[in-house]
Amino acid sequence: MRRPTLEEVKEYFKDAEKCISLQGRKFTNNGKFNHPGNKEDNAIYAKNGGYEIWNACQGYAKILSYKTPQYTITKEQIINLNKYGNLFTSNSPKDMFPDAFKTELEVGKWYKTPYCGGALFCVTDLDNIKNGHISGYGTEVSYGWQGLKKDYWYLDKGYTEATQEEVKEALISELIRLGVKKGAYFNCLCRKSPLECFGVNPDFVYNSIEDIMHFGGVKVYEKGVFAERVNTITKEEAERQLNAKII
Image 1 (tube, one colour):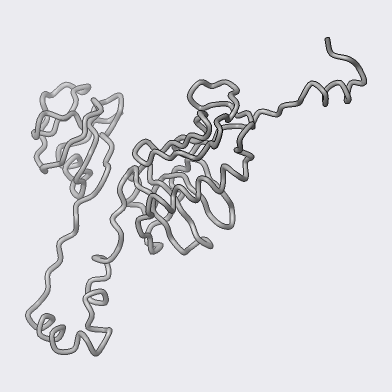
Image 2 (tube, helix red, strand yellow):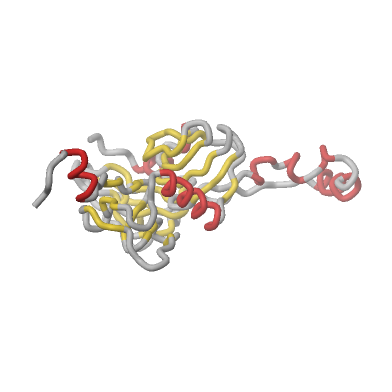
């Protein structure tokens, strides 16, 4: 892998705010970078704490979020806004600075949009955001649940952050469609083996921080992945189908 110049590194992280270093540690970009040495396989470090942000094996560190854009307004715009802002929509702040009203996407958060017939998704990667794409998993009304997709969700689609309840309701709806109920067997995502959904009055329990869902003691969902149902048959049904006695 070709080692980038210091200027290329600065350009790559120019708008980055929160990142995860190649050692897996979160840090806030302070805009200061340096080469620790001259060898081709040497990593490049950020000066704010010595976080590793590039090496020949892994490439660049992951960007979690970008800086909030700064805007300038002229004296004439301020006067016109004060004078006409309440009368003419063309002078509203939203019309003058439309970019300021766009939702800033962040890795690990859920968003919704009325486009695609209505969509709800969780962002997993912003590495290609400059090209107008983001990665994630979620659901579209037209296509149902989509697993992890690289460069799948497009930008500038009127995104707003989804509430925890909206995410939970969408997940529960899909799990019920998949057959999650008391007495059903699913391959638990925790134990990787069939388990029965048990309990007197089992309920869906959602952990929004880890993005996982349990039902009746079984982990039935985790980060875009749903547990698979295990087909079962009673002894009586098996005997009837086989026309034989099971002993």
